[in-house]
Amino acid sequence: MNKARLEAFSDGVIAIIITIMVLELKVPHDSAHLADLRPLLPVFLGYVLSFIYVGIYWTNHHHMLHATSRVTGGILWANLHLLFWMSLIPFVTGWVGENRLAPIPTASYGVVLFMSGIAYFILAKRIVASEGADSVLARAIGRDWKGKVSVAAYGAAVLVALSGWEWASWGAIAMYVAVAMMWLIPDRRIERELAANEG
Image (cartoon, rainbow, N blue to C red; front, side, top):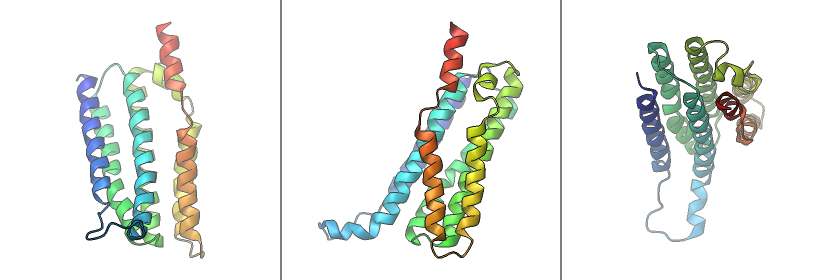
């Protein structure tokens, strides 16, 4: 299968995910005052964080597929597995925002991030299995400490959210934000390997 088709399909699904998230931002009716937007603030902040996460996955997914020469059936299913978990991001984002960081919705947000991280890891492993241990992607991700730390942090945040501590939900959200900030620092591993491979 041509990887361009897989990339186009994935891009389409990710665009729909972002569209669904923004539709959760309900416009206040019969009001034109800034104060009337205050109740929307938790939903909006959840949208911003989730938009960043979807953007992180999209950019890294793009780089991963750029380093891929062919697509196998295993890669197709691993990609669908990733898209499945990402497609739940709008639901948990809305749930957290509407319930003002209640423990179960906040933990559920972390579960979806955790499973998305696992699914991304599986997709990378399927590509490396297809491309070989000396492939561009294999050399770029190496032991993938950044990915492993992220998944561990999501798991820890879920436990924090469910701990019963007074500020537990805020602690979990802080951990989700910290992981997102870690990934906002540009990860040039794949770009470097591609440049070295072409040079």
